[in-house]
Length: 326
Image (cartoon, rainbow, N blue to C red; front, side, top):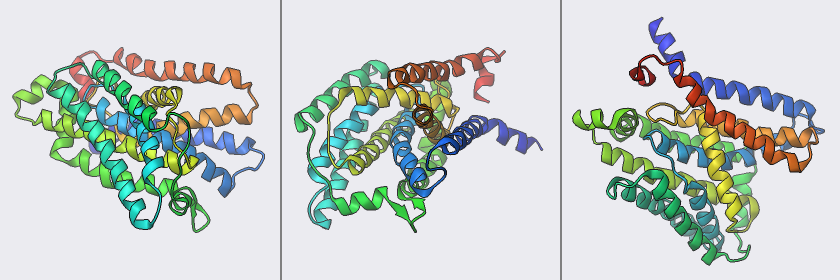
């Protein structure tokens, strides 16, 4: 019984985000002119996975008690890079995909090295690196353009067996291949420990530097996967500064909606995924109910404020600070 209660307490944020998403998606499909169809689900999934990948990237950094304000710019940079490289023959396309993913890994590793070994605050460091990444993206694509391998793009954004969105299958594969092994590894536990209490983790002999470095590096990889999918959806690359900032801010909202603590050491990327899907559904609901587009940023801003406030409200219930990490 105690194990069951512990599991519920551990997964409370994820389950809450899942419940919110299900309720909102049911309302959305119930009021959509086409109803609950494969096309409607596919469109919603394709939009949702973009934020989901960026939210997963943000989660890895947040659990170490940091904030990565460059994930949106890595997302843009890899989108611009993919519009140059993911073209041509199957071999050229494969090499292009690998190059884009390596670029994301490199960006994340640079962030981690600056924060860990340069001993700079994550917010300050990632603001600076984000500006650099955006500048490189702008050099690659001063104007929207480029292309992508259409066969690959159609496969990644289509449906399997004419029913299941391929993008959701890829998202599940990324969770199983990246998040699950990391969260259960020594480095993953070190990242959580660093977020809970870095001093205590250091004194216990936990490899916190390697854990944090792995978290930042994988965050860059996940943001790059998101950038790839943006290229698959749009068939082009664009260094849109407003879009990069929006994805960064929305990823923070999705993380908190998914039950990840902004104070570090608590939460799951799976919860952040459901938080991202729920946050994306908000925009769909505004569209279905025919809200004026000028009001949409206001509502999204309110949701962002409420989401970030949830973590602070939860602290009011904590009598002993150590209880936050139990």
